[in-house]
Each structure stands twice: as C-alpha cells, then as structure tokens.
Length: 401
Image 1 (tube, rainbow, N blue to C red):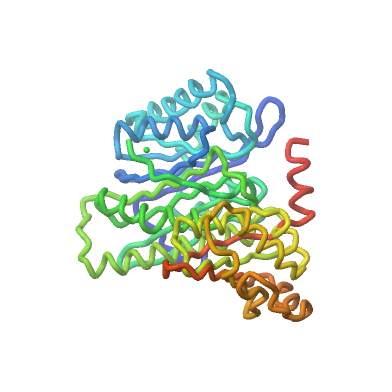
Image 2: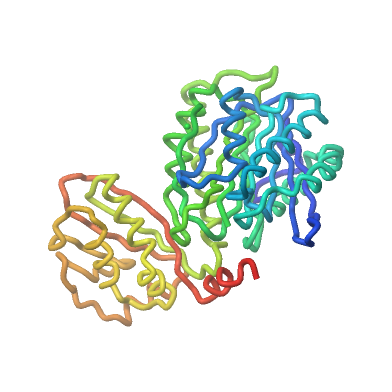
C-alpha cells in the first residue's frame, strides 16, 4: 500500500474475518461500506458460466446505480450449485440490507473459490452482525479486507494514489484462472477488483473511463488462459454533499491517476500469479488492434511458449508457430520477432542469433517479446503473460484435495 498515509479515504469502511463452514472448510468474508452512498459502474466476465454473485449483482444494478455495501467471500465461488444457490445469494443480501435498514438492491456481492457449492447461508447470517459492528476506515482494515479475498495469492494487492483532495484505491485478487475477458455491464482463482474513489464522478463519465481505460487494461493480461466465471470489477465513486464536477484539466489528471492505479494493480497480480517466476510483455506492432489481441492471446496461452519462458529456452519457433496458427490473416514471410533487443526472426525466417545471448535475456524475471507484423495498420498493442512452472501444475492438480 505504497504512499498511503494514516488518513484513509472518506466514506469507505472495511471489515473482514475468517470462519469455517459445517464441513470444516475455511471461508473468508469481507464487507465494504460506502457512506452516504456510491455510484457504481461494473464489468463482469464474458464466460457463459456465471457466479450467482454476479447474477444477483447484475440484477441489483438494473434497479439502482446506488451502492451502499459490497459483501465478499473467498472459499466458495457460488457457481454451478443448483437452483438453491441463487435463492441463497438473494437471501443473504436481503438479510444484510434488513439489518442496515436499506434496500436489498443497494447491496452488491462478489465471490471467489471452488466451483460447485452454494454459499453457506447460516455462516453468513451469523457473520453479518459482526461484520457491521466492526467496520473501520483505518489502514489495517483495508489490508485485512484485501487478505480476505485471497485464494492461492501469496500477498494482498492494494494500490493507493492521492488526487488533489481526494483518493483512488484499488483492492484486487487473482493468481490462477486468470485470463480476464471483461465486458462493461449495463442494465450488460478468479479476478476480483474493487476500484474505489472518494471523488464523485458523473455516471456517463464513469462509464467512459471504464470502457476506455479500466476494462482494456484489465483485459490486457493472462496468467493461464482460463477465464473465470467470477471475474468482477466494481468501480465506485462517492456521492456526498461536497461533490463537485471535474474540470477538463482535472479530468485528464484523474484519468492518469486511474491508469496508474490499474497498471500497478495488474503488475501485482501478474507477479503473484500461481507459480509465476517470469512476466513477459508482448508487443504487437503494425497490426490492427483486433488482430493483435488474437495474436497476443494465442502466444500468451501457448503451453509450449509458456514452458519455454519458464526454462529460459530461446525456442522462438514456438512463438512463430503460434502466430501461424492464430487464425489471423497475415504475411508470415514479413514477420519479425524480437526477444529483448535481439531480432531472432527476420521476415519469417531465422536471423541466426546465438541462443546463449537470447537465453541471458530470458533468465530475467521480466522481459519483452516484440512482434512486427508489417501490415498497413500502424498500430501498437501491449499484452502481458507469464510462464508456466511446475509449481503451477502442483497447485492446480491438488486444488480440492
């Protein structure tokens, strides 16, 4: 939580704790309160399989943009768990709302964990009074909340940035099942992102920032190629009596702050991915954005490329083969590939660079792979990926056992 001082953002309080279900499974529950209320713009997974928590949050956002509380849990994905799963989720949100004297629609919910089990209703009902009574706006409550949403992550992800007399805070989790393909929602191991500001921003402007900055950034990386049913971003701005409209100059500066916070959060997610030892920046040049994204995801999700990255093996043929099978129409005989500063492929054929020199670059925990398609589209596209290690296999071959 670099740069965060003792005085946290106004309007937001946090609480969380660890508990257990009847079958002795660990469950972590968290709560964010927003006073007097926040306006929320959300983005959710494109996966056809969606968590009941997303379904309920979407339903609530159709009825109101006003959000007062966000309830979270780690340990149960609340996905693919039968007809009762949705009912239980609604009942839990309803119980929280009743305890607080607010509308049920003013409660959002986000979950992460193992697919196939509903939320343990009794555990939540028993926990809610404790969550409400101990809400806090101090620094430690933010960190503890960030810990409460973790699954296989090894550390909490919290990024904070001051803006004039206001602040932007991002709390996130995500180590596995990370290949976000988010879609801006309009009444439209998992990544959960809570992007909070005590500045009020008009709804249309929030949607613009989400569409043009937040969603593209969080869609521009992949850890393992699996898009979760639970991926969620809640972007919340505080509405209070001191709210005022941003000038064009202030808006530009705020956009830069927002971009910084998102980028720093993504770096934390990447370097704490399951079994990750290396992060790679893929740059596609002179190609349309649409084609570039297909190319980048194909390369990023190639098991052969990822294992080569892990072993610092300069087997550039795997990258070239991934480009060729991506389905993107291009002239393969014009493609250049750089690993770091080394041009290993020139016009679709070997440039005969010494493997030992390239391997030195690949031994770093961060390096770039640049691909020049040389089409008429003079655009540049950036995407981040990671290696595939034995530890990743170990973690995910024993997830439920």
